[in-house]
Length: 320
Image (cartoon, rainbow, N blue to C red; front, side, top):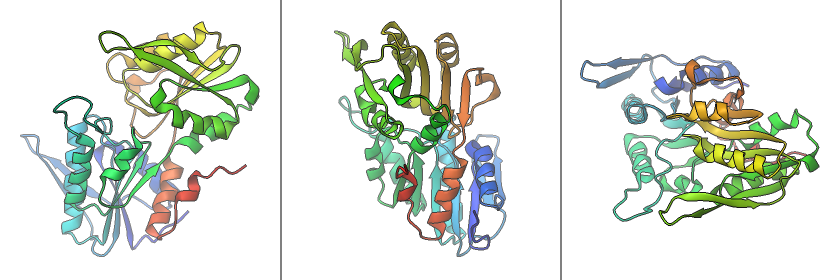
């Protein structure tokens, strides 16, 4: 897997240095050097170390914790590349922060996912690549081309190694909103599908009232896009066990692991918790049941194809 090293430059932001290094290894190239300085008052100054004039520049940076600092770093780096006369600037954002603020749920709420999209465009990005946005409509918030990648083939390939009998497995969505995502995994693995049924109580808090689908005696694969506090996925796991599931696998693209998430996951009887490396997980948040799958090959192939003006859609077409 190679790219034109003279015409394509790949940069890494602070949030995604390890992932970016793995991506460039797949592309048989190296990261372009960038100088990132922080002033005493917290301001950041960013400068590419080599010429990018006329080049296709790819900037890899998740807008994960610290979210606001990661976003500012991304915006400033895009601006630096634009002012240095880069021909095209693609922001590769494995985890797109603020994607959950995609609508006005109550009066006077902002739509911050759209605001961030506007900022990226205004800064000078000519294309954006994201993975498993919390809501797919965020892709439409951009006035520039936006490619929405899916970790679906990564998870499916991983589970296929287990060689489970499809009749003994059920893929489960922890809520109605994630049904399409779970159905995609179920279709690829040829398994049945179930949904955790939730209803709002008198205080507006969602509570589990049952499961739609048969899980008794089956291995359950819970599929979500994000594990944040882990209350949703752990609550779903406990309900599945109560209804007779024999094993529970938690599967999510983005492992935020805020608050007491790690302790909750440790204390819930999961067989395995599987995430990807879109967000770098510090050592103190890793635990025995955690498996981290890399997105490096998928992002490397995507960057290669974009840099040579090829289609990326067939990366997500199931091949029997």
